[in-house]
Length: 104
Image 1 (cartoon, one colour):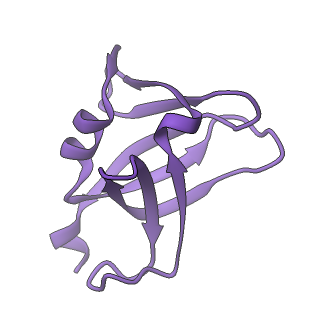
Image 2 (cartoon, one colour):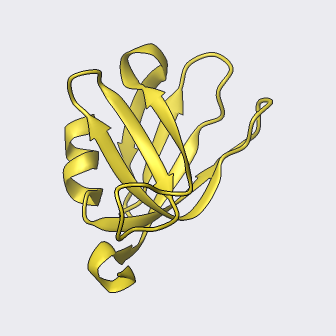
């Protein structure tokens, strides 16, 4: 287990579908079982989008402003990532499921 950067996470997961689940619940729980990752470097926003992976439009998603809410990103020994948030947001666990090409 080691600390990772947002750039490492994005590079590792950009062509894969991921499972994103809240580790605990603080008012809101996140659960995506086949999501793709998107990162807007200019605004430093990390998004998880579910739905049609062959289109730029997914069915739903969630966006985090990294500078505002992310405390740390950890790469676990099993290849999963955990993002810890500040204050009132539940931490999330991100696991790889498939490559995006296999889903299309």
